[in-house]
Image (cartoon, rainbow, N blue to C red; front, side, top):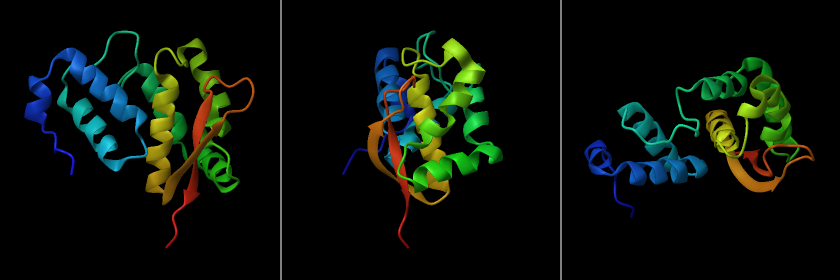
Length: 151
């Protein structure tokens, strides 16, 4: 069983260790504990990123959240999941339209988008499937698929 990480422990870590921890757990959006740890770190207010990487609270992250959590885009996410395609592929054009060059692999925006989509679909009763290649011209190279959980 994995060790339960506390806020006091996070506080004792170096910046570099928190930064690595945040990145690793943000990328592990298929794991409920990783999602909890990211949310705990963000809520703590402890520094965990360098200037070029987007994180919760940044303008770019707020745009990603608005797109992913928009009721108007829920159908796009669900339709993609139902057909076995990555939901990120369905909304990435909207993200690129809003963020332009601020949506990139280099600043972690593609990982953040995948994380937010996973959180959204988990709440709607989906589970993560395999990753697939994204459509030609996409910023993200691969993205997760999702399927409805069996009752």
